[in-house]
Image 1 (cartoon, rainbow over the protein chains, first blue to last red):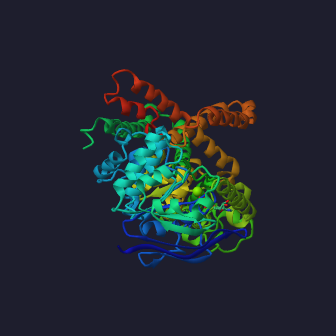
Image 2 (image 1 turned 45 degrees about the vertical axis):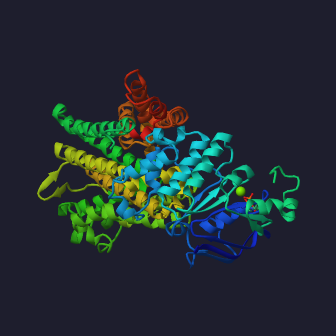
Image 3 (image 1 turned 135 degrees about the horizontal axis):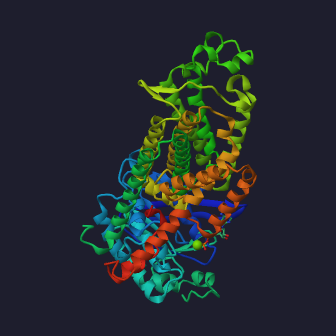
Length: 248
Length: 384
Ligand SMILES: Nc1ncnc2c1ncn2[C@@H]1O[C@H](COP(=O)(O)OP(=O)(O)O)[C@@H](O)[C@H]1O
Ligand SMILES: [Mg+2]
């Protein structure tokens, strides 16, 4: 497998606090990588650094061999990196179809887009995407009527509409019922191999269902990497999670 | 594809209904002179249409792209002065000083026509400048604000501050701008041999044509992909950035198109009013535009247009009784508060709610149960 994302010596500080500290991480093309760790370990910050929301102070992020660590976020997105945020953020006043239209950005210039219809010819493909996350019935409904779970799935569909090769999912199953979590795991599994995916998740049950390789973060740095079995046997990981409810 | 899927039809029907409403409005304003043969009244209606146009322009930037430009009157005023300058230079010699100098410059001991007045000897240039100057100013201002990621209330404060400065500057530079009095005693606008007397059908039709073209043009923009992205930016600016769009470029575009339309409206205002005045670019006017827009429904271009026509029309009717004039601002403020509290989408939102009630009646929606549920919260901007 070829290397898709390569992070080396990555670090950022907030008022002297090292949220991410000398992080090394390498993800192969088509891999689904789970990133776990106790609260405050720096998982969300790591995703922020990859997608350009936060500027790194040290280190490098190479995407397909190209350094992206200091590009503006819209250029990182154009390079093929899509991000789902921890707090679901879709365009609530737009319909599901319109949300997907916005995400589907083959042309990004304002000058061409002002001349193109808001209802693209590829609506068929968008409808298939809605079907993929089970939102066909809501295709023409405003996103504001969707439930919490549906909103999360819409966000995943948006990343697919965006045609991201690298998808960053921050706690996609947070706040979901057992059934919804199941469905989300199912969606992730169906995407395996087609996209490179990094999933940050707390729910170990969920991680077990989707994980190939798991990276454990602690205090801003990588603690260990391995299969679910390997990490749950590891003494250091157990110590980090001591007292937490993750049930490793 | 869409015709075969039950749930796609409502949106398409809404879009058609929307277009029909817009066209009906355009036909209606063109039909007004058929029923009213009073040049004085037509002049007044033309004025309201111009105000509708500037409110519509604000709806595009505020209602669609979320940019609350409190300096909308600056674009309007710049257009208004551009037109006044060329019409001033076209007055017959008796109104101007030596070498075709405007009278107020003579009184202020200005000896030669200032360089920035010279190109306005051409009406074509003035018409170009009346749109291009506000457009460029908005683009430059937008560049600084949006590249610097200034959003929300700070945009409102900055645009308001610039309006205040520009207004003071115009009043202060009496030698070049006519100061407090503005630019008065203008010639009539003449384009390709057509004369536009303020008190005539020709001027009314000029205004109605410009409004119709801008309204339909703006509608096309809101329905474009860029229009969709404007709305996405309004909803979740940060998110749009991570889809790979240069958000600042989109906001600059929305704000400068809005400014260009406001500039055109300002030019028409000078033609209709037969003068330009610093009150055409002052804070009370700018705030009025915001109120008209909010009352009509800022997320509806037509709603904002009609909001301005109705509220300004009411003001016109009421101001005939002198005693009411003072309390007018109070009444307007009250209307604004009520609308903000109870009708966030203005009159257009009210109409939309009524429309949805009708749609929800048994048998009105042929789709399955899920789409019916989904559509119950259909957004307001679709309707009008
Ligand atoms: N913008 C910020 N300013 C200050 N501190 C921050 C900021 N973002 C994150 N942090 C801190 O960095 C640490 C890591 O946070 P985060 O990456 O959100 O952890 P998690 O692994 O739970 O997602 C936390 O202690 C958090 O308080
Ligand atoms: Mg987090």
